[in-house]
Length: 538
Image (cartoon, rainbow, N blue to C red; front, top):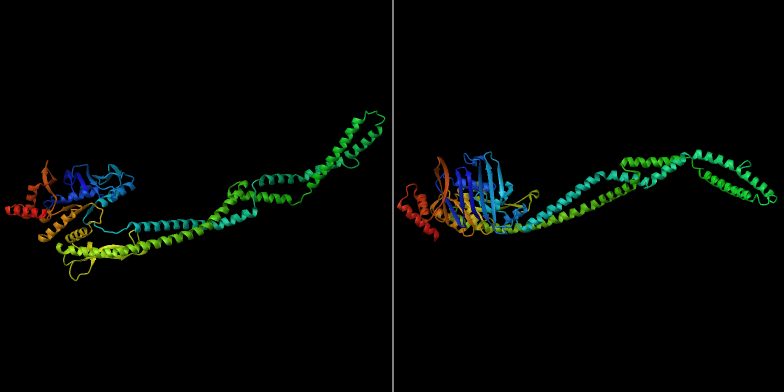
């Protein structure tokens, strides 16, 4: 509930500190005294629109602070925690500063905050007549809606990625086919380069081998010369008494090495007897690999890895199609679950609407709305308008005159009628709202006598469970208050200011007598005031 309201430099209020208590609080005063300024100031703290005109003349800024006490499980605590603020204490302080330029700053528990957060907290803490809205949003239905939204989002994200992948699928398949036909190997470039160099020098090497073989082979070659030398040494061996043995051995070894060299040269020559097109083939292969590497901006050694990446990407695209189909089935299932939950809530709403209509109807006659009719309307919504509250819109319609058709409550009812309809609704729904503080601004407009007394009795009844603040001109309503504030203008330091005074027993009786008789208070008015106060306590 609202514990305190501190106002500084708002319109005619220079400094005001109010402490509130549970039950029905009434605020009275002559027309123009400034009762609406109090509500405007409180509205600032609750996140309503700020205007430079609210700053008192001569002041630099207006300041309003409202302190509330709530239970640990109140929805406002969850709002605080979601905003990253301390949501464990039972006190919540909303503060608003407005400069002469109209700019404002907001604070929650002395921490800088957005005006949006102030408004969200204010909506959970205070309900001002004229801002009434009743919606049913069971947690199971809200969760089913979130599940469906999340499933739909996952499907849409996957489909978008798949569509983007599909755009490059043909290119990927073409490039993969090119690499598959090329079949690159990691160390192939060095091998091909070396082979190319060899093939480019093959003709010159063949000539060298041929000439060398010619020097070693044939009648005039080294091999034949060594054979002749060995035969001569062999014939002279016996006469040399061993002196030629070493030379003969060396000659024989030289002949053997020459034969081996000749065989090696002939084998190498045979290896160089290559396909005349091999060089062309090697160069084509090497150039094709280099072109592919340039195309994909990698090295030839990286081409095999790139090929594997492309294959993996295509596999993901193929798997992605199956994934989207799976997500689509999950989305359809989540949608069906939401619809089932919404239909269940709709059935509950239909029953609740009937009970609400009956309850409100019972309250209308004492509130001088006996010829009016009230109806809760459930209007199916198009699927694009569905939300966590379900598949329908709940609104109230009334008919205020016999034979008249139903229309929206806010459009058909006059200001005074609207306030009384709101009062009837709050009486019926008093136990269903988590908002601890209700404010009614001139709910008694246009009524008096027994009807005003009925309004006062019902406001007093609401005050047994909730904190109710009512701005009233009705003495019958004022007499029902658990405590009473009088708003009045006074002249201070050559300027007009608004003052608020809490009344005691005597001053309260005098104020209600003024409300009954006007400026000239009579003994009869005082007696009537005392009677009303006594009746309010009964």
